[in-house]
Length: 69
Image: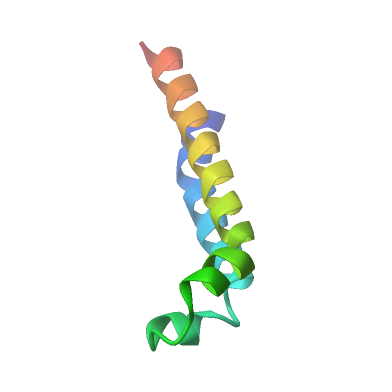
């Protein structure tokens, strides 16, 4: 049961962290006023959050499938 909860909760946590991490740059991203070098330089933590969230989701899905099958 914990893996099923993890599969639902992890994406919500990742979305919340992404919003908090990129809150000051979201307006510039929407208006396309942010340079590519600044995008990669300032938002590396956003990519890190995405990678960690994807890995956590894959582990939860793997454990969920191995638990039921």
